[in-house]
Image (cartoon, rainbow, N blue to C red; front, side, top):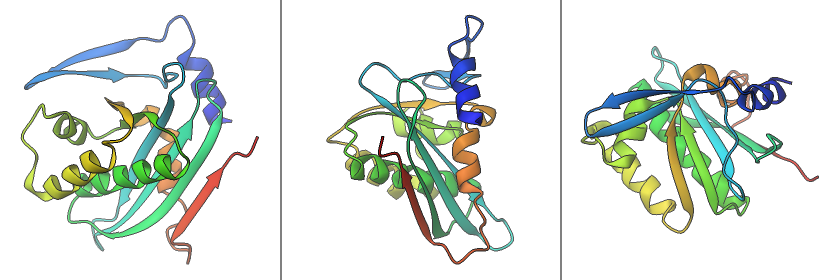
Length: 179
């Protein structure tokens, strides 16, 4: 139901973007979920990081131009030393999900501005995520991709998936639409 509301809001005439200037470039920060370009899908990723245990969980949701749910993934991805590292580890999970579902034109969104800026080369890559950034860039080489920073309030679907019952025995969960 939340995804349908986000789609409706994204297509309202009042939906807009806030421009924020950052070192090395401009990052557009959307305040509402927006549809992907024609023939593209949108993948939102998010992470949950538990500071006390350093445990890290990833969530990713793929939707089409109509806002239709195409797939989701939850994964216990182990240990991360920081929230930034957790966000960085969540993105490759989304890239792999898009590849597994054979989507080649993907708009990736994350609520981690530093992660998106590092992937775009707008800032120096923080040491703790350098190897992860390199991996994401390598894995996404054979797909058309766009990178977008969004507010965490827009990333609700991926946030909910990342915060799945982390106490369960479930390590990896995939869902996708067959219709």
